[in-house]
Length: 90
Image (tube, rainbow, N blue to C red; front, side, top):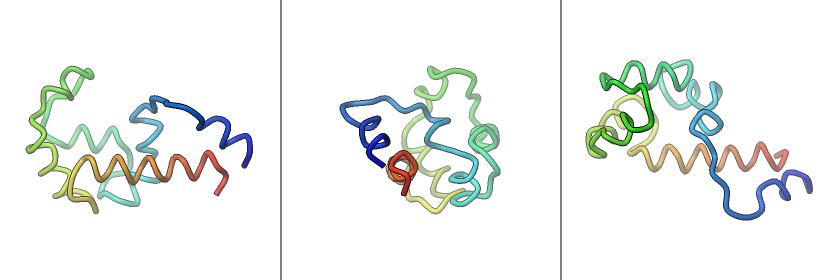
């Protein structure tokens, strides 16, 4: 647990694939993984720029329809909490 805590010290960037693991996505959505979540969205998402170009309200509406969450922000917060627990060995 100490090693996990040391890894989490300071500010970090965590990639979406590290947050939206298969286990997390399949537990909280109707999809098996993040790729399927993005592919089925109806938006063309090939790059980070494509994703950033999606209007927030439209993406939140999609996330609300296909997941346990009311917004993308809520989904990312929950995924981050699970990521921290995994790193801490909890």
